[in-house]
Amino acid sequence: MPAALAIDIGTYSVKAIAGEPGDVVHVQRVAEVFNTTGLAVPTDDASASKLAQIVDALFSDYSLPRDSVHLSLPETVVSSKVISIPRLNDSELASAIGWQAEQHIPIPPEELSLEYQVLYRPKKNEQALMRVLLVGVRKQVVEQYISIFTQIGIEPVRVETQMLSVLRSLHFTPEDPTTLVVHLGASSMNLLMMHGGELQFVLSQLNGGQLLTKTLEQRVGLDVTQAEQYKRTYGLRPDQFEGKVSQALLPALQVLFAEVKKAIQYFVSQHPQATVERIVLSGGSALLPDLVQYVATETGTEVLIAAPFANASGEIPEKINQPGMIVCMGLLSQMK
Image 1: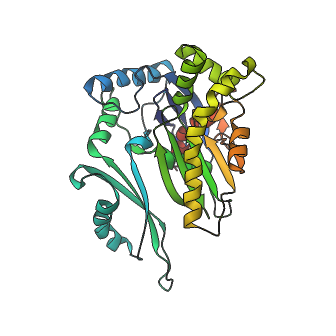
Image 2: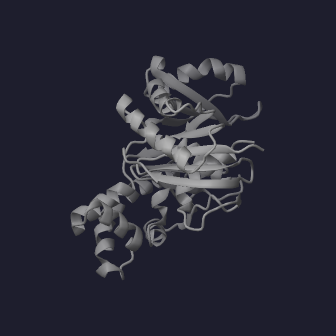
């Protein structure tokens, strides 16, 4: 199968994986460069041009293929909602989906780019409601994002949201335990709940790894480069650097994981007979030293780190932040 390319533009870095897509991705090349703009989606023509230059250099420096390019949209610019409605067939749902979007997606219809997916459709003799995922984004945002690539002569073949790519990469089945995926990016934390192999909800918070870096700058008196290095090296280890980094990070982590606890409480309120049995950490900040132990203690739940390359083959670099590449691997996993 011809090589394809998956790109994930984050506020901290731009990540890309070239490879042969499928159930088992054959990785050919992995690339990551610093995003000097600090933007995941351009806000004007000037920032779009700067991002285009970064992406163009990434293609050239790593000899990446420019055909069959698949992209992810940051969850922070997307509105995702799982709705429950009476059972409809496909044509009935297509007719009704616009009205449903008006009720649940806070974007005016004339500005809305909408996708939807049936998560569960009961049989005709069942009394249960069908469940549908709505994903909405402003048309202007999509156009600005695509403009990054059209400026350098690339026509992307697909754009989807980050968390749908994360979901696909993790290969959930109905037999898997109820799991909360915590995707820790640089500027956001996205939460995805799976129960019975079915998506329950997606939530997005505008805080992430950069909050931890800024906390170290302020509390320990470091510049941004030092703070990032100390965060990645010492993390929450109390026996490192006299515990100063750990002590400085804890208040910020408590802010982040208060939202995680709220998400768990919300799920339990909707499913009183169920419990969240597992948390999976993904994203670039998932490898913060001793974060797994911290989350396990705070939530009383088994905690794992996502391993998106576990079933992959090919050229996988030894020194790579694997959970940080999960969006790209999910983009490749979906193409068959």
